[in-house]
Image 1 (cartoon, rainbow, N blue to C red):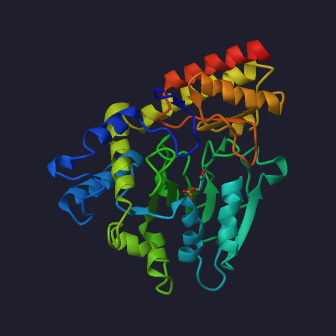
Image 2: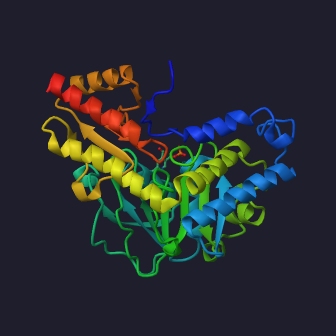
Length: 361
Ligand SMILES: Cc1ncc(COP(=O)(O)O)c(C=O)c1O
C-alpha cells in the first residue's frame, strides 16, 4: 500500500518533503558517518541543529529577544503541572483558566492537585464544549490566564485571543502552533506537544518570556524548572534529539517552501472552508462546533447514525483516507487538517464525502 491521505489527530501527517529529507540523510547525517539518532547531543553537528531550530521558531513566530525557545520532554501534559508549579508560588497568588474541553480540564486539575488557587473564569462545559466563551470576567491580579488555543477533540478554536488587560496569556497551542500568525508579545508562555503540527512525539516546544522565568522558585526539582532548560539551551540533560531535528526541518519547510505563516494561514483557511461549506450545504453531515468557534485544524462532524459513522470511517480508509474517527471520548468523525495535510487531500476527502452522502443519504 502506498501513502494515504492522513487525517490523524496526533501523531499526525508530516510534510512529505521533510520525511524524504530525513530519509536521505538518516544513515549519514551531514557527513558525520552516523545517523542523527546516533550522534552526541554535545557535538557541533547537533548544536547547529538545535540553534537553527530555535532561530527558525523565533523568525516564524516573530518572537522578540525577551523569549526563550525550549524543548522539554513529557509532552504537553507535563506542562499542565510545570506551569502552576513554576509560576504560582507565594501568598495569594492565583491564575485564571478558561475551560474549553478535555485538555483545559486536565490543565486545571494539575494545578488544583498542587493546591494552587485556580479561578475557572469561563467554561463551555454545559454546552458540551461546543463553543469558545466570550465576555469573560478576567481577574486583573491573576499571575497568568491559561487558555487552550485549539481544542483538538471538540473541534473549537479561539479565532481571536482574549484581552486580559496586561495579564500574561499562557496557551496550550499543541494543535494549532505554526498554523497562523498572531501577536506573541501578550503571551507569557506558549507550549505545544510537537506531534501534531511540527514534528514527531518526544519534544514539547515551550516558548517562555524572561519575566515569567523570574517567578520560578529554587525549591522545585531541577528537571521541572523552566530556568534549568533556559540556562542550558534545553541541554541540561539529553534532549529529544530526533524530535528537535524534525521540528527544525518542518520549520525550514514552513519558511522556505510554504513561504511563512501568512501563507500557511491562507492555505489552512482554504482547506477548512472547503470542508465546512460542504458540511453546511449538506443535510447529512452535521458540524458539532458552533460556527464562530470552529477549528481550522480539527473539523468535527456527525452522520445520521453511529452505524453510518462506522461505515464512513471504514469506506474512507478503503479509499485511501485515514484517521477520520472522532476521539474515543466523543465519537463521531473528525478530520484533522494540520499544516502538512495538503489541499489535494482535502479535495479527495470532499469528493469522498459527497459520494458517500449520495450513496447513503
Ligand atoms: C490541545 C492538546 N493539549 C494537550 C495534549 C496532550 O499532549 P501530550 O500527549 O503531548 O501530553 C493534546 C493531545 O492530543 C492536545 O491536543
